[in-house]
Image (cartoon, rainbow, N blue to C red; front, side, top):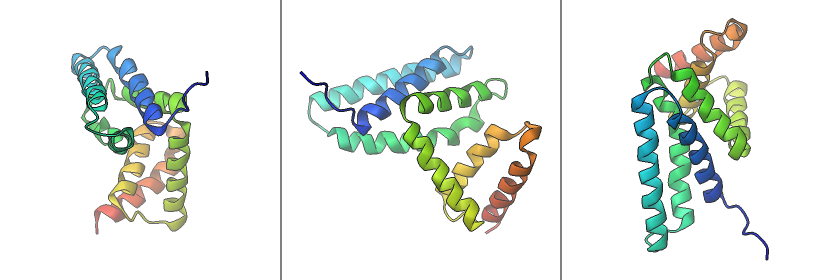
Length: 156
């Protein structure tokens, strides 16, 4: 018997599982509560699938959008724990969905080649990178370039 091929839905669910498992281990009650809510969301997803209310493909679209939006919430975490949350996100992606990181890197390169942010999605891609790199002197030049891109987009 052959195993079922891993679908995008499976990959996304595994990525969220890894991320929220890491969050559940962090020493912040609000973040642990967020991880518990994810468990409830996952149960609801499984129920919808068993009742055939939605397809795996439909759910994958929503989960993918959610994955893209996670970095937008990083700024809401306490400064002391934010680096751990960001690290958990990227560790989950590296472990379960490295293709996503490759796609994001390609999008970043397009923005850098163009020298201009065109969409909100691109804005948040750059903003997330800034959050990761701030406070690291070895990335000063990259940060300056990213700040310039963000400022031009914000001023339009």
